Length: 258
Image (cartoon, rainbow, N blue to C red; front, side):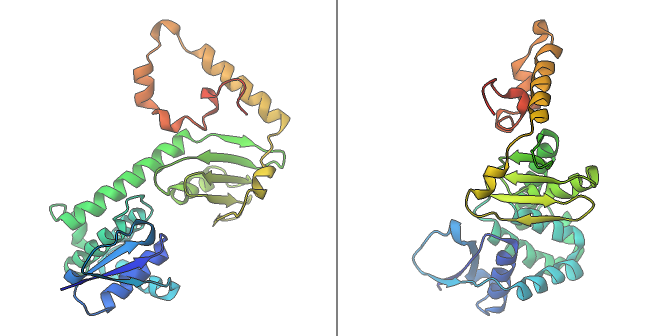
């Protein structure tokens, strides 16, 4: 029997809509698959269905997860949806099949491959978000906004935002995800929002203040002088701060970089 593949947008609402349509199709769980459009691989004996994102359907799926499984299950699914894993949509679908069967206890059934797949994807995303919370560097722009850039594998900016909202509630700040081109924007004493800027117009706004340049120079000087040369251990340093996290860390910039 042919497999019915539901192709959805690589957004949580798109994935939830794809799951809703696949579930309601009546083809049977073993005869359907959910994929994000970017990861689709055409195969014989498969029929493809384009999924049109519907916020109403997505909300129904989210509400069902929270009420019929658990809040913990929803967070596992949400973090998995932020993963760069090309097979994440179908992994979430298989997890929900088990979730609606076993209820809240599904999150402890790690021997089940469907549960373990979501658990591992969620943990990878959560760990990367945790590391970027520690490694992100903010700079002050001429506009007074504190601006930080990250280049993650997964879409972690939205997981970082609540933490910085607590840390800097009365500051204007923004976090730019270079990989996924998301920008989390926070206005002083207000909520944060996620935006997707278009074009490069906004990049011209990212001029640093003169005071910021002095602080960066001071920080690089401090970083160089605080270390004890005889105890320099590059291997240990790479373990504590892997190379891929250093691109936007000012202390590792060359003097000419701005």
